[in-house]
Amino acid sequence: MGRKPYTEGLGLEALGVSLTLPLPQGQIQVNERFETNVAGIYAIGDVIPGPMLAHRADKEAIAVAEILADQAGHVNYSVIPSVIYTNPEIASVGLSEEEAKAQGIAYHVGKFSFSANSRAKACGDSDGWVVLSQAATDHVLRTHILGPDAGTLIGEAALAQEFGASAEDIARTVHAHPTLNEALKEAAWAVSGQGI
Image 1: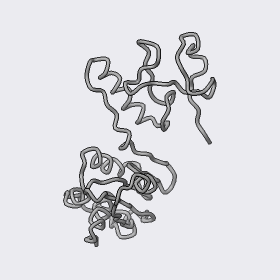
Image 2: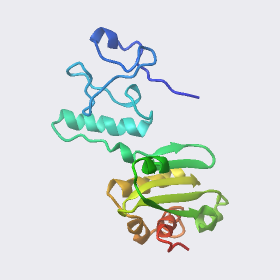
Image 3: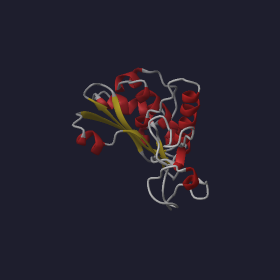
Image 4: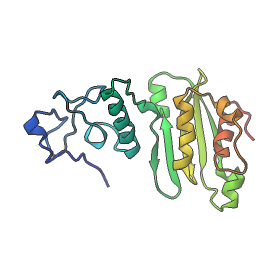
């Protein structure tokens, strides 16, 4: 269905704020501190380049507030999850296989099907799987989830990646039973060939 930045009618031209393209398609150009080319004007979210996600804009808003308070104000874009709210849901976080290959990163993959997850089976929603890839350095690179409640489950993977966890760290973390996120645990075990 497409999205476009809502920058038209904001008076940006009159202020001299630089855009990536002319209005109405243009987005506001910012530096790593979310500053525009005009002193004192900051921009975040859908009006700047990047994925148009509400949770990304929320994180950027916090970062700008921290920057204005003379704090670090950082956004780790590599761990912002993407979710497609379909049935089944699709969610992912981290580098794609193509990006990992382009960067010359060796990785291992573990996969687990929701058809073997007791909670998914009990709920009658066991289509889909979790795929987790880990770099040779033991850091989780990417998690893909296709299946029930993927948009919620991806949060655990994003947290793991934010803190540099390995697949083994996820696998050895106790997960309540029966829960859907046990599928993430099992995919993590599968990276080393130890899955059920």
